[in-house]
Image 1 (cartoon, rainbow, N blue to C red):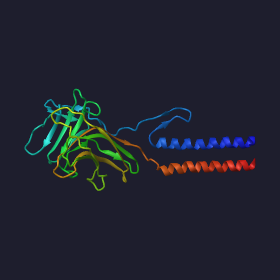
Image 2 (cartoon, rainbow, N blue to C red):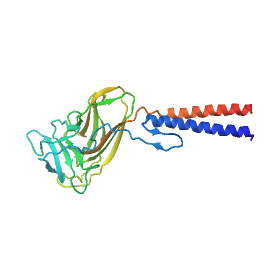
Image 3 (tube, rainbow, N blue to C red):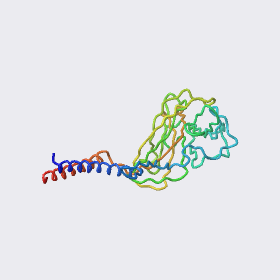
Image 4 (cartoon, rainbow, N blue to C red):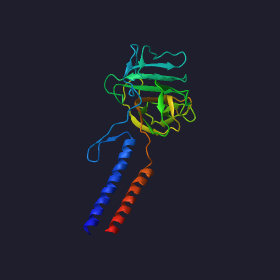
Length: 281
């Protein structure tokens, strides 16, 4: 091979590698990552959690807390005349319970000793309902309206587990109004039944992380956001625990086909350039 051909081959290889690197930089930038250059380490900047107090650690824990699951808890029952477990003088920063009247029981549990039952930190939530209807169930409302941009990918991540629900099973999910389509519908997951849970004694919680990606079709500001417990069958008891929730904006993520097409076109252009250089040589 002539020296000019070798030089052309090296130039072509450098061109292709540069094109691939450029595509990677573009993808990193769209996902919220920052890179300082091809020869320096990539600095990964995790997307910001749009939920403040996502692990429910901060707030005012009431002095009239009641015993629950071998720990202490604040909360309220929505079971007509019953006041069992009702406490006052407490609040969770940035969150509030918004339950219906379907035998709902909501608890903010403080995990004060061993074994640690919370997935993260020392507090978690317990939601219980007999309702299978969206809007008629035990739910948790985020205190600040959220903004969503059409076409962006939003990632919802949360840890949840069943807490000895009825055999029919339990679900947990989120609702976004007015962006749910139609409003009032929810994205949810079905939980594996955990019969080892006890309302009166400490137990190991089989926390599972769930992740749901969602792309809104419309832009909206000040959307209401709810985490919800749902019964799989109306009238059956559904009990769930929830902890360490997050919502991140990943921006516009190009489809794999789009990225591959960009690399292909870069390679094709490089090949054409090399062919012309070789012909001239």
